[in-house]
Length: 368
Image 1 (spheres, helix red, strand yellow):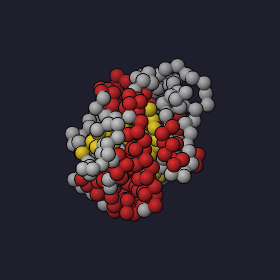
Image 2 (spheres, helix red, strand yellow):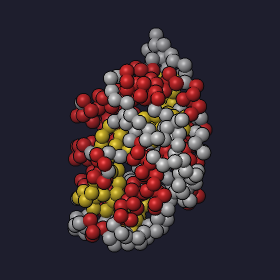
Image 3 (cartoon, one colour):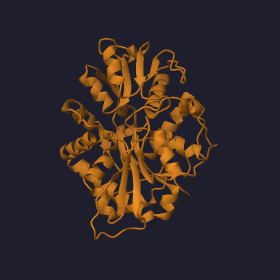
């Protein structure tokens, strides 16, 4: 683990702030949905130290731990008389803004907005307290135009948003091929086209893009439209694991209500255990929750392959978050970040130990 590094600022911060916020499975998109949901609490349930806990997540498969935990009442059972107030977001930046403003306590979010939010606040606003999901990102292409990895050169490939996790990963992969692309404009040996995941399938069908480096379920939607998987990002990582979703908490809420945070983490650990033990049953529960959020369930030809490519786990895979930050630096989107203290895994490890599970580590990036 490297020594402490100078604080970061996003070179592209102003540019990104001016862009439309776009939807992705990791939470890089439009503003939060105004659909707060309050769970039913038994009249005799005992409250913890807070009357309620406000949690946020995205209506996407990579946030299935939150979707299913809320849908099945697993979190509420652990919280007793403390009420869950759940809100869905379509944007990492808007979720960070909600947390910074004090209107959100705990959130499921992707690594890039967690890194950016932490560094922009000089490490004073959030902690990552658990992992949630790994994987679920693929390079899918038009098989008539791209038949091998070398054929990607000269083509138009979509990513969800400038500087988001998938965009950084694709830029890093391009650099490893020895090709040149200007990160800001996306122009070069490959044309990187930043495209809203909601419209990427239409862009693919119209022929305006040749493929996309995207998270699930967008990747499987494209495959259902005739695209082929050229590369699974998991194959580029040790043990085929990399963080796609974390759980973050407001530092203020963590300090004032550790019992509530611990209860949410117990719910997360138990939900992940149930997901892994009953994948088909839980897939149906997640799809039911998605249908409530969006008004439409995912068809089997989309949800089945998408679900198989995502791993649900408690380990935050901290070393991969650090690597993802380094990829952003290499791409020229981020100055060398100081991520020391971004993790606080004490409560998670307490929960894991009580459940007879292995504790996890912070790769040297934890609270000292």
